[in-house]
Image 1 (tube, one colour):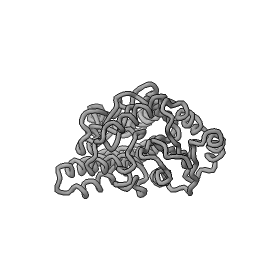
Image 2: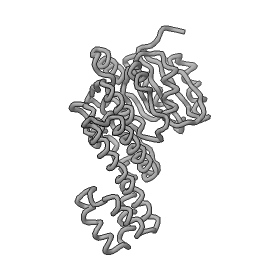
Image 3: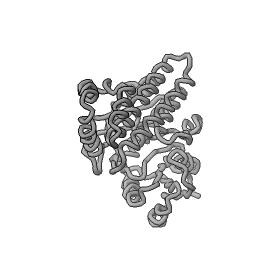
Image 4: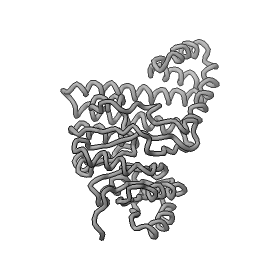
Length: 317
């Protein structure tokens, strides 16, 4: 085996066999070429043939086949096989810009303080967000304090670079989480005393694909609530514990919004409105402060209005 590369790029590829070739090609087009890519299939048999062809031509690409266990499980298996002191995270349907590795590796290699370096990204694919930045929707930059990371005032994009020793020290991704495992990782890394550096340049194309908005949003919000519950327990006695508890409550309310909307759209109008009211939907915006009394007074209006809103959200996702 040749000497270890400077960076190991972790590429989970479940369900994206038709896209992972483009993802790997974006690595092959990097200005910085001292890398290895570890592609993990997470039990998807359609991935291996695509990766095998590319790995045959480029020995920097490696393939790990495992039983399906979810995204955290898949990432941890790939990280365990990594040989580099730096871990770069790249989902199997996203693309690195040509200067991603050059700029990100330089940023984390020239400063011993950060455990993580993150960047901005540009939306691409079948979404009204195409061409917009990740930071247009979730704030980035400023001080990545523990409180700021918990409260989502400073967001870390998933395609970040993490020191291998930091990843090992915090135990990698939590395999019990069905979603929000990246948020959990950033919290635990910051909680352990490592800093996060942000490069404001968009260095990733963040591809969005059609899917079930309500199912994925509900799953994410409930998982995030669990992340915050665990953080609040670990941080007991510290001021950040209150922020985590508040965020857990907010995530449960937001999950209730999704459930309530689903119920109304499915025809269970009064029960759905009750769920929205129980989850404080009027706090969402000025528009919702108007809509909730309207729905209570005229329930039949709720279903067409929320169905229209859901269609718009799916298009904007």
